[in-house]
Amino acid sequence: MKRIAGLTAAAAMALALTGCEFSFGGPSQESIEQSIIENYEGEGYENIAVSLEETEEGGYIGEVEYTVPQQNDIQRTLECSVEPAVDGEASWRCYPRVNDLAQLIVDGYEERGAQGVYAELTSDSDTSYTGYVEYNDPQTGQRNRHDCTVDLSDGDANWRCAP
Image 1 (tube, one colour):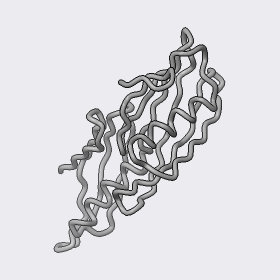
Image 2 (cartoon, rainbow, N blue to C red):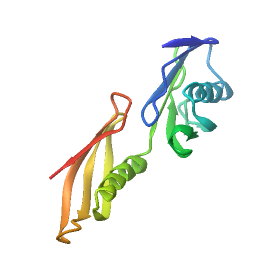
Image 3 (spheres, one colour):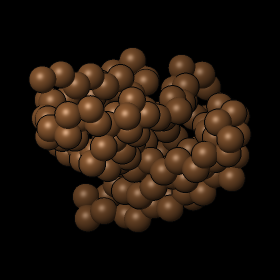
Image 4 (tube, helix red, strand yellow):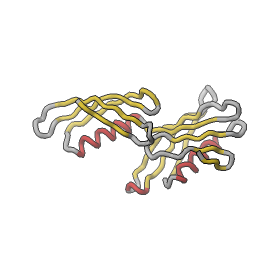
């Protein structure tokens, strides 16, 4: 972790979890949003926009959108959550939306020639997802189903599907 202007920030991950801890007395929504922007700017992303809304518990939820210039300006959107401040500290995490992770699987199967691909995932935790993918085999036309897992624990969206 690195210290930036009173903030302790963890390195951002392109499609996975990102986080930061604040160590000054109850960070404002503006300072949290600025911390998220600075974190993603530091990772080389562009066109960063953050929108957070306060929760009843005193935290925030929302999204961060950014452009990945190294990947033909692909636009990414991550969900963010900010825990309520405890002892003057709050932490935030941003992670991929479940639908975006399912789309990664769909894209992977379509790139291999599968047709009629549909994937569905559910979150087991912030870093673990399970579900399935269904597709038509392009050679036989047969409908197949594979069980899938997605693991974000190392910072990448590692997915695996098998019968």
